[in-house]
Amino acid sequence: MNWTEIIRVRIGGATPYRDITRLLFSLRKAAQWDGLRSARVFSRAGLPASDFSIHLEWQIEGLPSGGSELGVCLARVLKDYGLTDHNVWMEEEEDETAVYSR
Image (cartoon, rainbow, N blue to C red; front, side, top):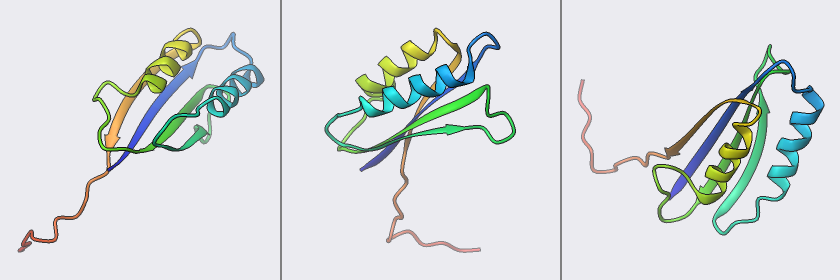
């Protein structure tokens, strides 16, 4: 099963942009976990100096609704820099047997 864990952070004005991007990329590089397919860093278009997210893509049998150990740790660290939101998303698989009508 495929899962995506998204950790978003809106940093305060006192944190320099370069410091937070260095932190995010170092956290991403340190992400060596079984089942982790990718760890990507995004900045919000139009607000590149304040809104960031890390997307952890997993291919494992199950992921707790509260997130992976890695995701929980990342969210905890990022809370020191600003407003943080952490969610787990499960990829929906098409049900071949479903009958759709209009």
